[in-house]
Amino acid sequence: MSVSPTVPVVAAGLIGGYATARFSGQRPLGGVVHGVAGAYATREWSARSPAVAAGLLATYLGAFGVSHPLAKRIGAWPAVFAVTAVATGATYAATRD
Image 1 (spheres, rainbow, N blue to C red):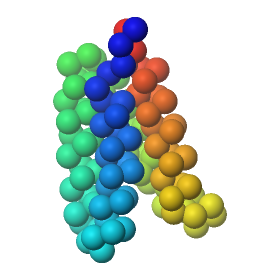
Image 2 (cartoon, rainbow, N blue to C red; image 1 turned 135 degrees about the vertical axis):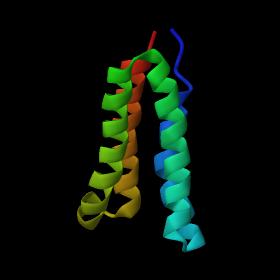
Image 3 (cartoon, rainbow, N blue to C red; image 1 turned 90 degrees about the horizontal axis):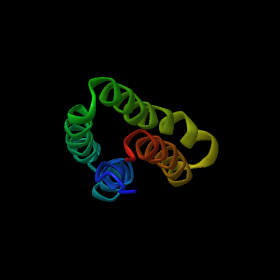
Image 4 (spheres, one colour; image 1 turned 90 degrees about the vertical axis):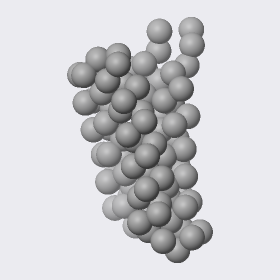
């Protein structure tokens, strides 16, 4: 069984996007990292199936959105790691061969 290259890309987009924004002080730069990773992953998912692509893109964007209110409850880094675990798990489940 092989792991889709989009699994680490999803993790890099969510964690890397937040880290870039946090450490550079430039939120738009973090958004660029998040967006590039999401665009690449969506392109790869689309080759598999438009339905898979739509579902995983919704999960990826939803994880980003949920991380914000979750951060107010548990802290920023724990929230980012939690939503990344969910999004990468969903990506793995939907793309495994």
